Length: 321
Ligand code: UT7
Image 1 (cartoon, rainbow, N blue to C red):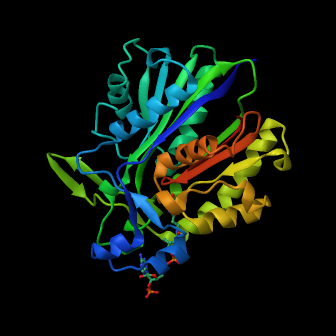
Image 2 (image 1 turned 120 degrees about the vertical axis):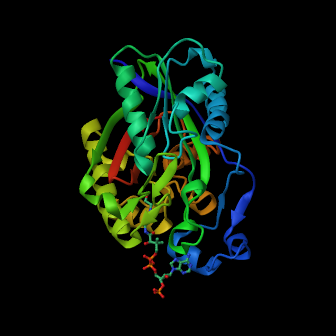
């Protein structure tokens, strides 16, 4: 049996943290008290105007490749989950491949499932490895979400940030990913979207993120608990045997509500949203890398990663680290 095992992780956050008070100083009609009480977010990172997703992805990938103890040319698949690509095309994954100097002709493509992007991407990469054709996959979540925020909409602009996280998955006889599940329900499209497009040289429609926060909250809490129960069942493991839960890093209240529905104590839940804000597809690998590097996640432990985003799309992976 071939498993896809995490060989290394990496992450990258651009510039300096921007606190809630910094946002107030920039003229946003909000307060540290409101943001902390409703979301748990205290700061986020915002990329400089000329910094793109592929650059953030590159920094995170270099760290993940180093941690995996391999060379860029050993990578034979790249998947980048992003909703804020550098260009309409070429894909951010091919830009990343070129930046990494990989010339072995292996496939590279983007995957768009918004904040569920990393859950979708790791599940997709696992299938390539299990089928036997791929030895080492670089799976990245990278976002410059600040580019699609309406800074006059205080209900959304305080929630998000920029960053990237990456994982090298390699084929192994030893257990790695034990189960994955991904889902979507397009009926919920309107509650979280960027309803704009480029046509005839112009932006048509609205190029900014729009969200019905309360509808998203209710939907997210329900399906995140469901899918976090689904993957241990698929993997033949009980929830009690899971060492760590990495829920989507969108909001501390969603993290707590999901944890409560599932039952594990909050000390088994990894949460970085207070310092990073919601970095969409980057948020799960960012949290994973942080917990691996600070020693909380140890080899052999079982971890559930889960994500949810616009579409709606959601998914989870159970892995043995
Ligand atoms: O991948 C999914 C990502 N999205 C999410 O996870 C978001 C899920 N939703 C949420 O976390 C919450 O719905 C929010 C944090 C977005 C909003 O919290 P809420 O408790 O649902 O607030 P609300 O939208 O009902 O707004 C309550 C009040 C309103 O004022 P009034 O009408 O009661 O006077 C808003 O205008 O809070 C006001 N408000 C703010 N006040 C200060 C909204 N945003 C802000 C703000 N600062 N940034």
